[in-house]
Length: 171
Image (cartoon, rainbow, N blue to C red; front, top):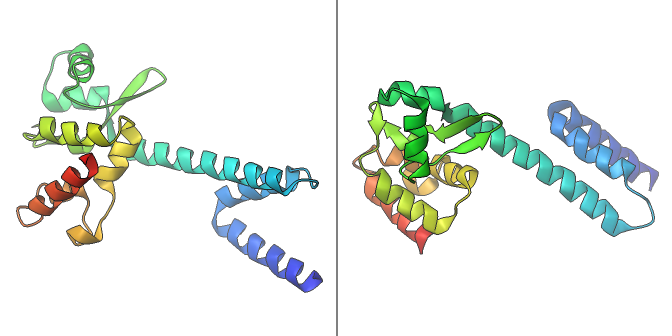
């Protein structure tokens, strides 16, 4: 048993050096009571879920545009004009603190995507979670030769397949 524990500790140490978030999962396990395996599972799952949510939010914000970026791109005079588009459902966005972030794939050539209304209709049939919708649009897919749906929609050779995938999401 000591060799197994030693091996596990070595593997955990190796992974922790390369994956700082894994340290939080280990800390949750170490801090969990020893009298219930169920508590270990909940502690680790809770920490892992928190890490995944934080990663998803960070990834979303890295590629999304703040209100000011959308305002400048669309050439509208005020931030309120951007928020009107949002409140009317013409674009999706997510508020963080005092700012709202909008997935960049909604825009092309300095304007709203021409097919954005249809695109959002299909996506909203799948979910209303903006981060989930952004992930769906930016996930690289084998069916699209390693491209995302957002990228494939701009390619005439891949756009038909991207629309099929979107239709399947909505079904």
